[in-house]
Image (cartoon, rainbow, N blue to C red; front, side, top):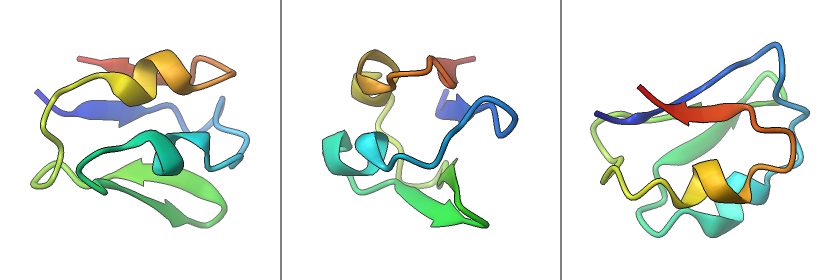
Amino acid sequence: MPAKVNAETCTGCETCIESCPSEAIVMEDDKAVVKPEDCVDCAVCVDECPVEAISME
């Protein structure tokens, strides 16, 4: 199951984009958005997000 970003918590710091090995995260309206078709469920972004806005559901 792909990672999911909580838009209310996301600060738009782009740390997750830099850490994603599959380039599955993009910015939309200054918030991170995971492209589910590209996410490989590695959870690296979950560990790297400084505000804990990303989870694996």
